[in-house]
Amino acid sequence: MRVVLLLFALAVTASPALAQQPGKGRGPEGRPTSNMSHEERRRLREDVDSARGTYDRRDPRRQGRMPPEEREKLRRDVLDANRDLRKK
Image (cartoon, rainbow, N blue to C red; front, side, top):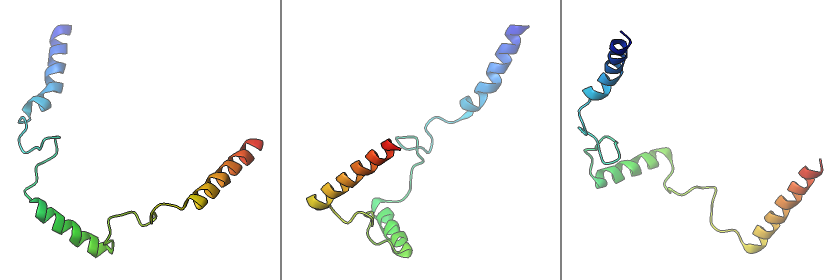
C-alpha cells in the first residue's frame, strides 16, 4: 500500500515537469528567444533612454576618477570615522 501511494505521489509531482516540451522557444540560457534584431533592440533602448531623459548609459554619480589628494583625504576621513566608532 505504501509503495502504491509513493508511486502515485511521485507521478503527480513529476507530471508537470514531464509535460513541458524540451527547449521549445527558449534561448541558450533558458531565456525566451527574441524576434528582435540587435539593431532593433539598440534603437528601442535609445528610444526608452531618451524618453526617460537618460541619454548617457553611465552612472551620473560617477563623473570619473577622483584626484589622488581628494582620494587620500576621503580615506583619512573614513579611517577617522571608524576610529571614533570603535571608541564608543
